[in-house]
Image (cartoon, rainbow over all chains, first blue to last red; front, side, top):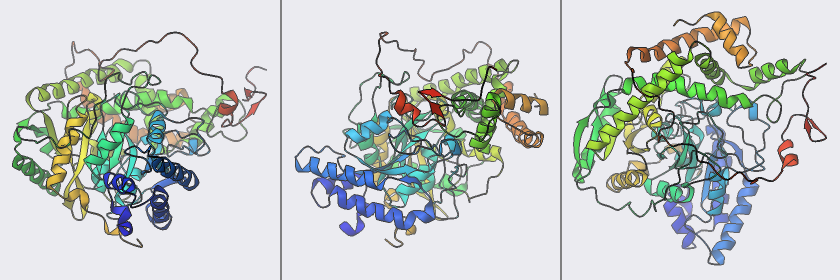
Length: 490
Length: 95
C-alpha cells in the first residue's frame, strides 16, 4: 500500500492512518517529496510549509497514539493562497501581497487545524481569484497534470492541479463564479461550492463578498463530505455566515437514488457546448436513470443574463473590497512617494495585475455617479430573476444536472480576449448569483482532458448533492483515473 | 452606453490607480467590449423587480456592543511598510 500513498483518496488516507498502516509523518514526508520532485513542472504551490507540516504531522501522530484522533487527524491537505494563515505568507496570487505574512488564521484554517489536518502549503491561484485559467497569477500559470499544455482552470487552479497530480489528497478552494467547480472539472477531481454563508468567509481574502464561498476539492464526494464536516458552520466573525445546524455530511452518502427527480436545464445544452462534453454528460445521466432516477427537461430562462449581471456585481464589489490595498498598513508600497495620492496611485498600479485593474476600473465606473442605476441596480434586479429561475426549477425537481463547463480545459495562452475567457463560466456563474450549492464530479474525457458533470441543489442541499455524487462514483470510475503525470518519477 | 477615454481615466483616478494615456487606451478597448456584453441586461424588463443584494435575503445580525478583540497593534504592524512608535508612516499630508 505504501508505494501508492499518493493515489489514495482522503477517505482511504484517513483509514490508513487509523489502521496504523502509515503514520502522518511518513505520509507527509512522502507527499512533500513528490511536491519537491514534481511541482517544478506544475507550479501548483506558491508556498510549501514543510517544517510546519512535519511538526503538525508529529502532533497528529502523538494525538493518535493517545487515542484522541478524529476522522481527519494527520490527513494532509493544501490551502488556496486566499486563506489567511498566521505566520505564513498569504499572497492571493498578487504582487500586492507578495510580502504579506498574515497575522491571524482564517476560520476555515482554524477549523481544519482543530480537526488535526496537516497543511502542506498554499496553492497557486488567479490573482485575487479573478480568472478562469490560473494565468493571472503573479506567480505564473499552473499546468494541468492531464496535459501540461492545458490550463488547470481557475481561480482555484493550484488546488485542483495538486490534487489531480497526487501531491495532496484534498485542498481548499473558493468559488465566486465557478472557481472550485470549473478547475475541478478541468483536472478530473470533485469540487463542492457550498451554499452562500455555509462556510465562514472570515480570513478568506475578499473578492466579491455577496458571491464568495469556500469549499472542498478532493478525489471523491465522500472526501468532500469529510471536509465539509470539518469546515461548515456558523461563525460570529462573518456577519453573512448562516446560523443553522450542520448535518453529518457523511451519513447520507449511501441513501439510494430511486425516485430522484433530475432536471436538465435546456439552456445548459445549447449552442457553444462541445460535442464530447455533451455526450459525456448524457452518458452520466443514463447512469442515474439506471440507479432509478427520473429525468426531465426544465428551463432556467434568464441563464444568458448571468454573465452580464456577474460582470457588474462582482467588479463593483471588488472595486470596493480592493480599496484596502493602499500601501499604508500592509502589502506592497511604491518607492519614494511624493505625496499621499502618488503613494496610493503608484502602489496600486504596481501591485495589481492587468485583470485585477480591469475589474476595479469596471466596478468603479459602473458604481460612479450617473451609471449606478443603469448598471448596478439593474444587475441586482436581474439577479433576483436568476435566483427565482432556480427556486422555480426546484419546485419541480430535486437536483439539476449539466456540464460544469462548455469545453474541456483549453490550451495555455489560448484565450487572450477577456470576454471569451468570461464565457467559459456560462454554466457556473448563475449558481453564485443564486447562492445555491453545486458540485462538479469527473464524468469522462475529451481528447484526454477531463469532463466535469455539475450537480446543483437548492439552498443547504449539500448533503443531498454529496449523496447523489457519491452514488454516481459508486457506479463509475472516472474519479479514480489518474493522469500519467502522477506516475512519473513516483 | 459607449465608454469614453476620459471615463476610463476618471475611473482610474477614483480608484487611485496610476494610468498613462496609452494604458487607458488599452483598457478602453477591453472594457468597452465587456460593457457591450453587459448591456444585454438593458433588454430585460425589470420594472417592479426588487434588487437582490443577498442570495438568502438574510439581514445583518446584531450583537451586544462589547469589547471582543484585544489590542494586537504590534502584531498587526509587523506587516506594515513603514511604522514608527506605533504609528503608520505616510508622506506628509498637511504642510
